[in-house]
Length: 138
Image 1 (cartoon, rainbow, N blue to C red):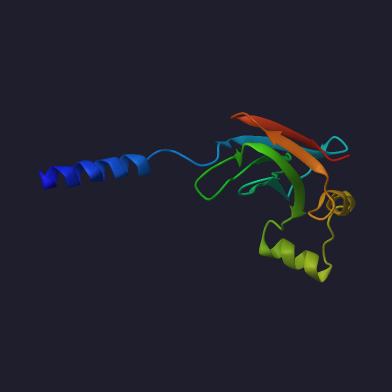
Image 2 (cartoon, rainbow, N blue to C red; image 1 turned 180 degrees about the horizontal axis):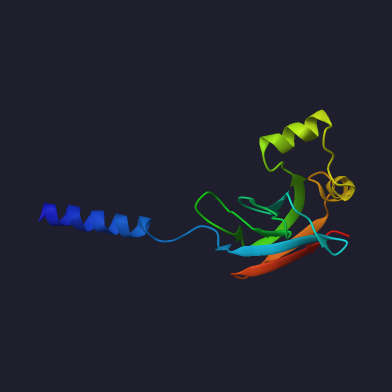
């Protein structure tokens, strides 16, 4: 009888532990433009009021998809503060920028000044799966 009680207790504890809890994470894609032109090479950060932030890097068309963590795409449900930062595409680009052999596009510096981590006032509400966010940085 004791054996069956232990098995029953183990199954109960296992069932409780297997419940899917935690924040709702929705898939989010988007496009980032400035003066109606796509902006490539920017890391877009979504910082929720509560919970883990998400991020995505814009491609040559200004498109991005948010990552919640290494295994999960998306962002948690709720209001997010959005800011951007530049991330070089490769070590050669990073070195060229650092040494002054290359300069970021003039509008990139203005974008980073206005929409960087310290100054951005952009806010987005994530409230549905497969949500598309259009960010116009004008």
